[in-house]
Image (cartoon, rainbow, N blue to C red; front, side):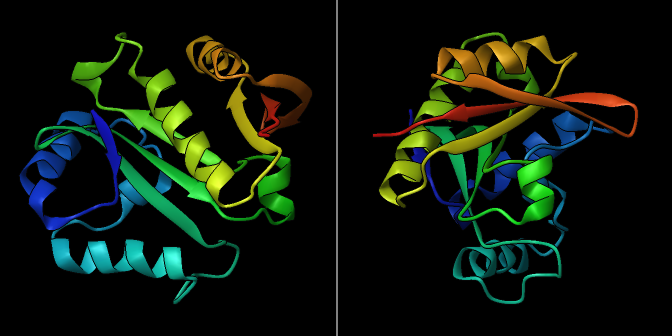
Length: 167
């Protein structure tokens, strides 16, 4: 199992992952990119990493896929910096595990590998946010060293904001 950047060799697995998600809300946000033209989607992901053609309100970010062999198990997105909106709600890292691989501890593995990338980029502390009712996400964040920093209400939901100091 390893963390890789998106690549055409994983196209079949990615498309199966998207189909498996169905109407479920997709995390991280690049999972919502139009995938019908796979090379164009990969270019859009690469543009985000390079800080090119980023829509207003977004920041540069790197997308990673957790893979075993040629199969994608999950996806993470690491924002290189935060703007005021992301500092309030969003944080540095968004991630998701493919439905058929959930409940296997892979989210902790994915988050820890993404935190290594954050450390390499000099990002510390790392802000990670989740909704209060998402107990599984809160447990994952705490298992990776997250400390609850604050809570805010937004659109009628309570968002928990965690910090992870990287040394």
